[in-house]
Image (tube, rainbow, N blue to C red):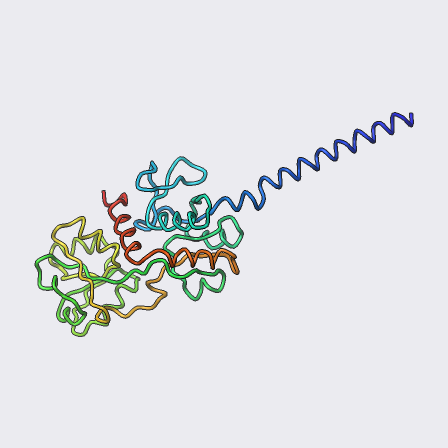
Length: 281
């Protein structure tokens, strides 16, 4: 009987050691080594031209984790450059806007690259890298009209101008002396129609949308203001940065990579994104 008990104990101990070894091996395969091979980025995949969803990998699109679709856009291209600089594989994690901050806090994703501005409120809960895009404000006007050659805000004295409802685009119109500030409109398609019909002389937009508008309609022109002659805006309004968990070790590394992307390269990446976005086809 004692021999049977001893034999049974040996078997049980052997099995326990085998299970412990398997457990350790399993942890190793899904632990830090595996994590270091991936750069997991969260975005909506629905905010063109910064990010969108498409059916294939054309124009540098990256497969979205968990489904057969791909993510394309400016944010994806920036994320790819960062991933390459880190020596990691880029993984796109499609995440609703309200879920992005909790996702990076919990470690589900390594970074938020989703056209997010580093506002004071967000900085209370997550960290941000240096800015990777600044959306300068422009004016979209009629080609061949009175304001196509404008270079400064004062050139729009007497013009009928509008902007999108509930955005800072509409409030900055007050910076133009003598402007006829028209009623705010719900969306950009409505403003394009109003401009085409002559109801307004122009509308305030960010540069990516301005490029899209002029590409879609040959009757439109985009006014980019001379330095110091455009709208006064805050960094919270126009800056876009990478969101990270508090005290993330990736922050300094990502900032170094971003420094290596020239302003000309950033503009080209955005122009390409605008040309390739689904809405522009």
